[in-house]
Image 1 (cartoon, rainbow, N blue to C red):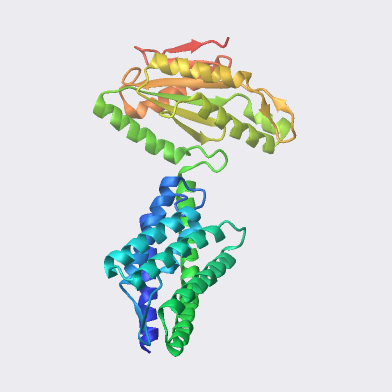
Image 2 (image 1 turned 30 degrees about the vertical axis):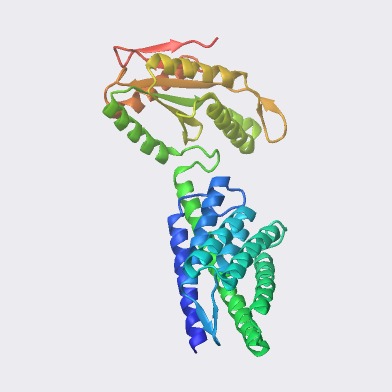
Length: 375
């Protein structure tokens, strides 16, 4: 009964720590991934190592022998992060084992064991197995290595046999439960992150959607007021987009939208915010850009798109043009609410006067538009 009680406490502590870790990292996409960058892998490994140290404080007593589940965080690090997090986690636990329990034969063997377990799990993580098989193989590998250490430490064969039975049972049963809990938490976090992303990203192009555009626009304008800076806005609309859909099909229309999104991103700096506002309309927010700078950028975008060959889903290519409207906060208007309307009016004027043009609000009169003719 004592064994079951200790095991239950260990599993509860481990589950709580994993849940807390999942909660703290839920906004950090790709944190538990072999494809994560080196810094994140190191952080992941340290976190799993700390969880292992905590588990060492909640030991399981079995017939005079002290057991725990410290190897499980190392396995988690290997499965979801690869070799580096696994080794880092094992190093943290090994150092903690010596610091907390002193230097003796048992602590040195235990520290050496967890490092070997971390390395072996890192090697096994490279195999193209499913999660379940990886977990099983790493668990068995850990059990074999740990059994060797027990054999070196325990002289009484009867006690040794009891320890083997207890440790293998606890590790396999506990590992089975934690495996499913960890995978459930990972999938829940992934669903949460996808829901967050879908709420602000356009599903087709991956750009900001209109909801995110409104949010960023407000934040940028408020910041401009605080620092007395200008903000320019470019609205972009594809000319005769309906004809593209009618002649080449909606799949081709989608391809044009996706490729246009890439052209816009490549034409803008990392400080600019590109969004798809709906249908064939896009926008670019230009923080700290004057009207003249915005017009120059808009004309560059227009010329780039005009000369770009858009590849359709059937392999053929077409050329398209766009019309653009430009307005600038704290230059052509000092009213936040009118900035978008002013750019939209300019876009309409560019359309009305022949398309494939940039229209910008005049410096003194909002309703007077300067047309930049296409070359």
